[in-house]
Image 1: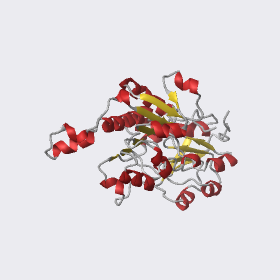
Image 2: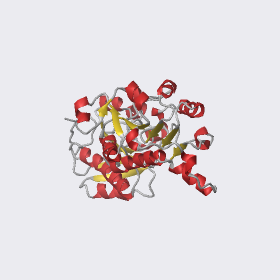
Image 3: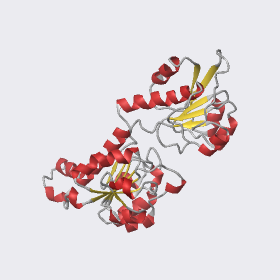
Image 4: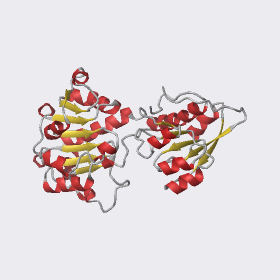
Length: 331
């Protein structure tokens, strides 16, 4: 069980919630959740980019909703009233979870808001590459009506789709990709061979899936162990026709090594919704490569998923301040 504390010691207590940073035109959805909560909540709206800005704006904060602003150990130790941190999204790499736990601060995320959207986006990138849609589109618009520019294209049933991770999103992605005929394999050290086999997925070890995949789709969290999980040595082991798809987090791939792998032909291409630096640098070699598709960290987005994300992030705050346990609190 997660930590449950009743903070409602006084019916006149006013809780202060700092929104450290956000990309929305307004915070109407969050405010609606707070108004209907029965609690007295005051929102502090900010656009923090540094630890100093979070500390300055958060001195009176009982709770934080966070997107990209750093919630480091220093920040956590500097906010005397902080009780709960809720993250806009799945990955919590911006938050020092251990430091929060040491202070008894609840950390919660929203792991399921974009499951359909991210799995759909990964599938779209897979299909775009497998059928070489960007290449053919570009050639036709340049006046070249010739399918031969795309050769070779192979049947899906002759290719292996490797998936790194076997959580909510990769499982949904696999459900959508598998009927297309791909041989599907996955790597996840926490999932058994039997559990994968039950849904028709072959469990592979990391080195094996790196070597065997024609398409490799990344769906692991960004943690210390997965930082630069795909580096120069891994790219050298891959098939020369391999394509890497990343809808997870940019730093899981060593971008310098990826550029080299593409330039030297270690692999054929990449389809990226995330990059190491966001927005991607205007000087990035990736932007000049015809064998790279890049989208602007948009895999999560639909109008419906955005509303769900914001409502659930705010509801995490309400539940904890109300003495309840959020179902999304990180154990």
